[in-house]
Length: 167
Length: 122
Length: 336
Image (cartoon, rainbow over all chains, first blue to last red; front, side):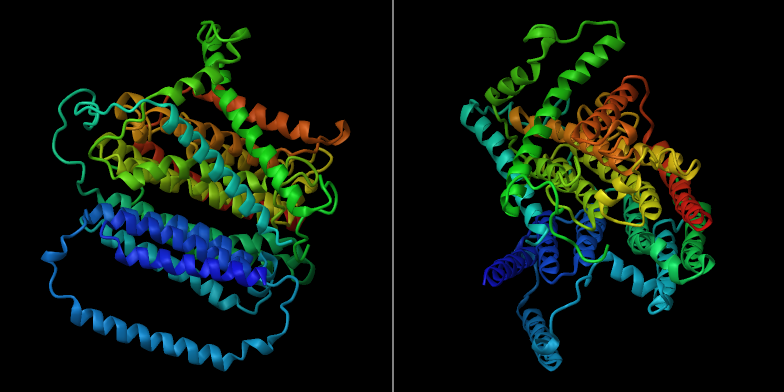
């Protein structure tokens, strides 16, 4: 019961701060709302027992991704735009609504198909860093892990090429 | 009890403490704003130009590099934690090799950045 | 090691675990704020003695009550909000900066079981939260709408993220050696004076120095105080802040330094354990304060690095050094 109350409080807070991200006209205020959203998401992960994911969420998203956003905002010098200068947003809004509805329906259908209610209690070590370490490094997910390093390297090279073009 | 409940407590206590401090100064402090007092402070000179300027792309570079190395650290931690446990069931060369390959590929990226001068802050 | 017992079985202050956490939280947070405030006196005295001056002497014996006088003074100062600032973010930043630094306290073990929240991801939690201090600092700089403040904020983030990587890598060394992610287990793995700073002989000591250096940079202490460099940026992000709001930044800086010392003492200096001399909170406090004093010593002896030297030092040398240390300590575990 208490758990359900906490869940709904966190869920409402997540959605509200998510709405703030897209409704603030000041890009920095949007970015700060996004950090708040990430925090509430991390709290939801904790409730799901995904401890490692929760802390990673704080470290990587609220920490690193936010820094990237902030620097991109500073690079582009984005300001709050006067809504009268924007083109008519109604058609785009409709398309956005349709896409969001489609994704939402897909989520509902797939979650329903999973029959989550039947899954039984999770193991004691579920979501801990120990379990994550074991299943990556005992060979189960070894290949995706090694490929991830190639992905990171490609991203590194890409960033350097973008930012240091004139050498 | 969920171990994160105390974390929530600690954060709540911190919020209350900081609100009390700022609240007290709000209550006790005087409030007499004047035009000069609320002007931008630039060492006593009249402010020049605007603050909202574009910043160099090198900040963006640092942010991307940080994000990538941060992810690398996130992959490193599960390995580090389970390292001694994994040694019980696998040979040392395998467990060490897994991470050596990962870091080796990343090192190529790091070396590329070094040679392209991405670490030069000029 | 699997699973997470919510609170250490021993050492509960009360029968109820939530009450234990609440009371311990209040005690630890108040004590640390007290120590941080008092450390401002300590640093002034320390600096004065190094420069052959008496330092604060007027308020109380040896000027010991100086922090209280400072606090009372700040409470009575006018809270000036410049006209051009972004009001909500400007008001929020000083609060968040203190909350982020105090949140880290939740996972630091002061004694066996004497920890607010004994998380099995303790190390990562501490590092993640202390890195989150960067955002409110930058927010303060941006919201101030002042060139010095914004420059200070940008430098603070750039420096903070650059030194975050060596910090994360250096923290991996004790994890590999202890085979656990819980701060309490890491302390126990060092029982009997087998501190990771001393043992194994190579990687441990270097990792400790690396961690300490990176912590100094994260806390913006000299020689890494580029973000607030008084002589070029006036005071960095705090230029437009007055009264208690400025005090919050000041307090947060000392808190951050104190907490960084505590984490370093836990990871590398055996935490609350002192081998044959017994174990207890006092050892942890002593180790933390010794590291804290070393930070002041460094501050008043060394010069500031230049911004470009600072970035190059981290990315060119410290990051690869950290990677080498991780592999070296892992090799040690295989061989031992």
